[in-house]
Length: 73
Image 1 (cartoon, rainbow, N blue to C red):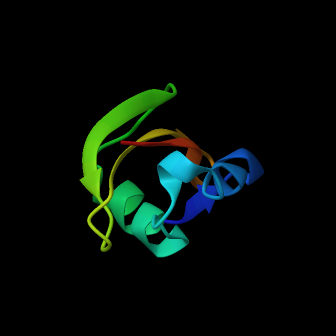
Image 2: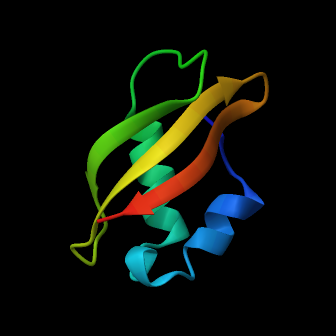
């Protein structure tokens, strides 16, 4: 499945709470979510390779899985 990361989510990666979370971490997390996501939904409990925990908000669109934002812990 194709994972599309919004500019908003990429911008949030520069914030303190999301530091050490990479684009690769987000793509892996989003691709691990099973099934279809028809509406924007928050998924909790992902871990970046750096050890930083995060949540993400995603939904499925016709061209793939859209990651709307990232919430670092």
